[in-house]
Image: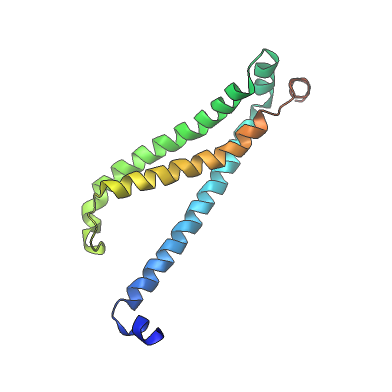
Length: 142
């Protein structure tokens, strides 16, 4: 099996592809952790505002929706800008792609969905934590 795997001329390309995929997963993980940190920081800074909203009668679902919409709107702007740049740079990548069009719509949609899903996951934890804010405690802290 090792001879058949390494004897064909594609072995170096497979290794590079696997390394590229691994680095891509690491980059996605770092992006999720970074976004989680930013959304957590924003939620921490808005604790009093969230406490006031909840004291005035805001439902937990409204607070959850507000925090999630904030994180997803930032990611949507980033995805749109990234797609425009990727579409502009696509002809430069033509020689590196084998069997895939540089402007493959399925790839663009899949990447956008993966990034928006990662954003949703990274924003969910701080948003869920924001719904647990006790209005009395939030209004007393400075």
